[in-house]
Length: 278
Ligand code: PAF
Image 1 (tube, rainbow, N blue to C red):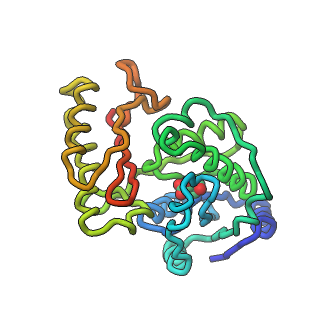
Image 2: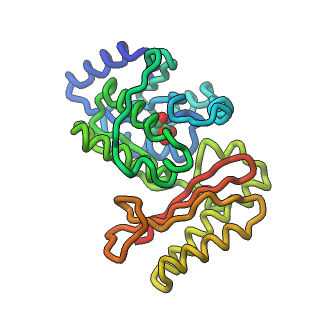
């Protein structure tokens, strides 16, 4: 696996690959890799010739300095995992390599940015679009692979791709869960054994809502889900929404895709999860 820390060298390498007719797939990450990331890499390997994984803990998408500081950064074990996953290229830049001083530009991607995660974490998606726009610019991937766990992020980045008319195909890959149903996340390392048990209420609730989807109104389902999560000790619900899968506004009878999304604090860790209902 080749490892690059500068944009210039990576860009040159990929330009050469492109001249040789190779397609490029990008799996953008913030490291602390888990099986969810490995499954993105496996999908990218099947669909493109040169797979680039970026590991960059992007400061502009954190609105809590403490969260940024405690974000896990196990780079040595990440490199091992990438080698085992047969990743072709790792891009692991510093903050100075990615950002100039006092960068304030942002993209207006519309209402999507301010709903759900955007409401709880103002500015989060500005940071995400900033860094992903930079990664797309440097790497010029043919395809980019994102996990469904960050469903809203996939919609936000897809909107950016649409607005900027970027020549990249977005691929959303299914959520990977552990045996108990907990969605894989880099943040799970912060969960205690008890937290892990309590956190299962999130996927259990999503499964219950999916099972009951045809038998209740959306308002009833939301009430059931909220009560179920609130009854779990150690879990503080942020939101549970049943939303239109395209706009993320509350689902309507004519919504063609409906998704249930949840965010909650479990112990000291904020978790998100979702499930496509129909
Ligand atoms: O999903 C993530 O890990 C990050 O938000 C991303 C897409 C790598 C941008 O920093």
